[in-house]
Image (tube, rainbow, N blue to C red; front, side, top):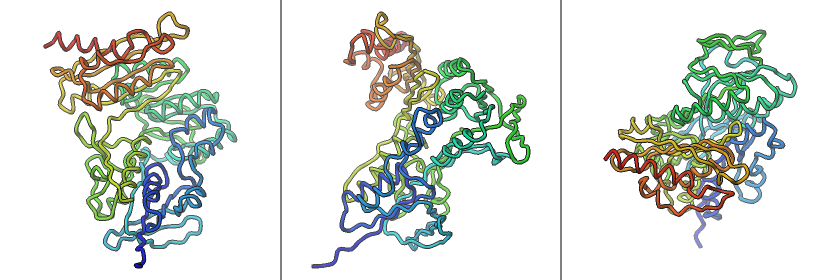
Length: 459
């Protein structure tokens, strides 16, 4: 009987995409595949999305955010997960990676037959002196969260400034308000949450002000003012804001530098180029997660959207293919949801500005309704916005803001987008109804009807 040839699969990155790929490949190939995963940080397989809730006190401790401990991968799945091990270079000709072991200080070369790059995203950081001062925190990793938690407990800062008005920035603003700090938020745009249209983003701004966040919009950070190496204030083009704590939430970009340096193609978004099976154009090299660019199903354009949902699915697709199966990743809609200041905020597809950039002529409607039947206890107001193509009525995007029970309606709208439905098609959807859950005309149906009437009137 011939010996079974064992291949070596090397995975760079120990979180959602990387370990999903490793797990799926191992599930399908037990005897002929050695799997080694390198993670430069101290933790693997955890939920970064849960960090604001850890800081707010809703999550009991950092261990609660860890999905699987390293021992589970090693002992139950035979995946050699190596923490504090940073891949510093890829040699695609030799099929090797160079690794720095930060625990021992040693460096070594690891061969591979197949390689998965799941290096995630790089958080934006202002290129200004003082941006690395004590008291200035990023919030991307679990180690970042533990460092911030330590500073809050030991130094008890009073004045916090959040730089950036995206999902994480707004969630962190609310978390620090709940911790008793005075919080200011600086954003270079005229509204928070650029993934919403201005008419919906204004509602988010009002909610933040309502809990005491001091908003500085249309403002850019020009200097970090420090004293003895510690942050003391932020200088913006609109004035100075006192700060003994700064949290950076300025968004991120694909962490594709390692791949690019190796000659692996990177697209116009800065993400690694792959096909639908998550293969790069380089033989034996795959990529998944926040480091890659993908295809937007509505605009038809390449995008880089850092969401754990995409990363898990892409990693799974790569792993299935590595394991000898067949799977594809079809693209994204950018569906996202968040809870800020008691409001649920959701979006999918394109904003009006994104639709215009993609070449669509659009019509849009905003309808106000209630989350439950108006007579039922705790019914609250919610707003639903639909964006549709002017001539055809095809749904292009949707946004929702409301209290409890509002946001998950975005999933039905995402399904409508996925299936290229028109707003007229949507008026006939057979949605569930009972007074505790919805008015007899669900807000999605009301919005679809209003949009269909608007488009019919313009035709």
